[in-house]
Image (cartoon, rainbow, N blue to C red; front, top):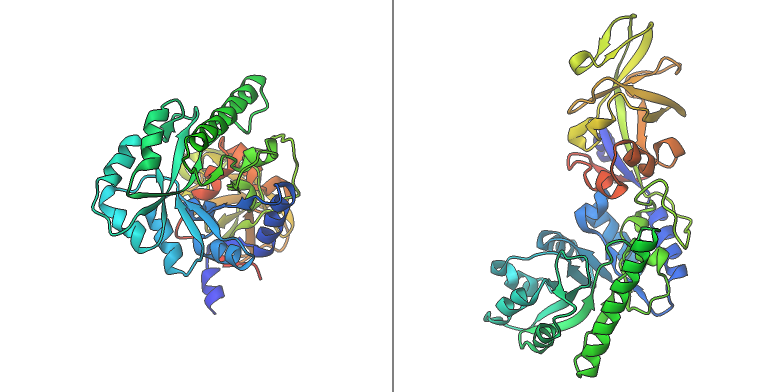
Length: 377
């Protein structure tokens, strides 16, 4: 009964066996002593934070990365064991909560470290230091070795790790490859300087998903898979040095709410952007842009799957509904299930993201909170 309620109108379905498969695929190509730090920020890229993290815990993953304090606390409240690193900003007024929930905070820069070090804390704060090697987003600049030395000597910080982030590791252009190698060199040179000075950088990591696939032989303690852990690539045409056999974890499904026939000249949905050129059979589907399905897919080439056949979206996608041309599909009725994202080539997340002029990371992480997330039967 509970699952039937969740499948009332639209839902996300996750295949946890596929998640385990993808983890094994990643482990197959990384160095033997390198561990996976699973990136589960943004509600595990739309897949359900706690469901994904629990499964990862069950298969031996003990290190996680999130974006916010709230995400980290949610994991702890659901009994997720292991290290939880917050990759983003935590307001100084909430630093005590990091200690209360045994969390690890990223040191964003020297000023942030200084302010934490001046606080009256009951114990040292567990941290990883972010090194800015060219992304220029957060992190203390690799060139400012004096500030870095100070950070590693601060009495309130228990430094467990040091990391950086590559800004173009997915690119195959010569310029971006050259830039990425510079970032790698800057990072390891900084680690070497710290060690030479007798300072312990802790566990080191620099590879996210495309760093793993294009620069797999780096000697690090962790890799940080995000999008590939969920069985998809960021773009349809991504070429990587290593190809994994990934299985998509997520499917997006909804139910047909109404089926009707329209005549030539009749319009569909808002602003009459679609006008029938002939008699048609159409179906309304109980999902829309408020659920995270992109509105700019209206009247595009994007297809969905109904009764193992493809159907095209027609008219404007609404907040809670969209309309399909189902003229070529027999025996269709209200209550039938439509798959909007899944494993089939025409409805893979990469294809849907491409059609909506974005990447899968954004598409999946924007799927709405009102969509129940359930495990595949």
